[in-house]
Length: 176
Image 1 (cartoon, one colour):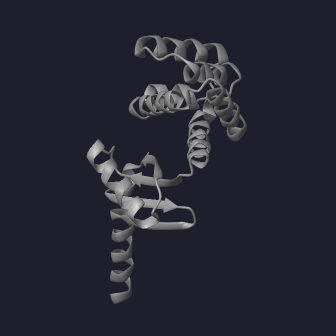
Image 2 (cartoon, rainbow, N blue to C red):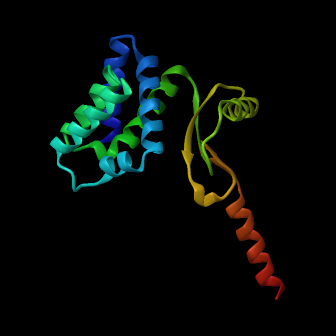
Image 3 (cartoon, helix red, strand yellow):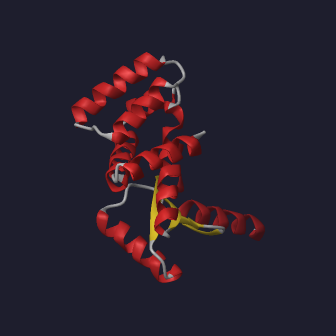
C-alpha cells in the first residue's frame, strides 16, 4: 500500500515539477514526527477516527506553515485511514526519487539525531565506497546506545555500541 501511495505522489510531483519541494516537505514532516511523541501517537494509534486525525494534522500544518502537495498528500492519508503508514510512504517516495535520479539509498540507524556536518560526512564516506551519490534514510534508535548501523543494498555494517557490548558479553561467557 505504501508503495502505491508513494508512486501516486511521485507522479503528481513529477507532473507539477515539484519533486524537490515535496521531498523537502516530507522530510520536514518526518522531522516533526520524530520530535513529537504526541504527533507520533496520533499518527500510529487506531483509537483516533479519520476526522480527528485530519483535524489534528490540519492544525499542526497550520501552525507549522506546512502546505502544498506533501501536506495535501498527508491529509489524504489521514482521510483514508492510512496515516499509520505515512512513514513507510515517505521512505518509499524517497526510494522512488533516488532510483529516478540514479542514486543509491542507504538506511542509516543512529542513536541520536545527526547534525548537518555528520550527515555530510556519512554521505561523503558512502560516496567514496560506492562511487555514486547516495541518499540517506536516517532512523534514530536510542537502543543502539551509540555508533552507527548502515545498510546499503544487501550489505550491512553494524558498528553500534549495543552490538559491540553484546559481543564482549558473549566472549566473557565463553571465558568462564
